[in-house]
Amino acid sequence: MDSTELEAFLKKFYAARIEGDVEAIGAMFADDARFRIVGSPEFSMLATSVQGREGIMSLFRTLSDSFALDEFSIEDLLMDGNRAAIRWSARVQNITSGETFTTELADFIEIGCGKIISLNEFLDTALAG
Image (cartoon, rainbow, N blue to C red; front, side, top):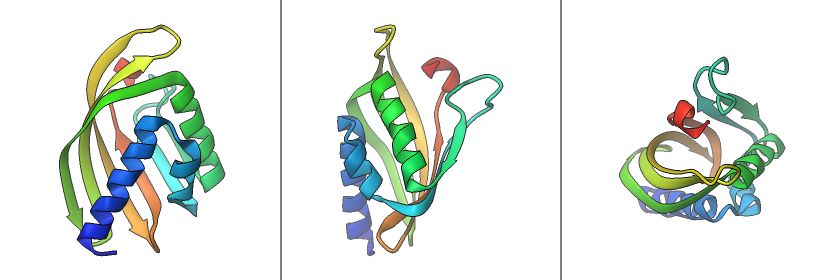
């Protein structure tokens, strides 16, 4: 995947994520991919790590059911070969409480054979609940 294809792939991934399209998100991950929300599980239920497409889709379903995203913006996108670092922002609504906040996140993504094989996400786990 060249840099133009990688950028288009990533934009498609984030569009599906903002829409909460779990099927489209799942199709973009390799069977044995890993997704990690970096943080301390002692302090936040969001800090977790899952492996495998089904587990990742289940986690994205939970995230989509819990948080609505809008006002999305890619702030920085750095690509190096099959890896990308993305700093993005969004307004987040906690669906249960109705509370909204704007935050920034940082994702580190590795692609292999046209699929995401690793996604490490850094976010303010305390702010998100």
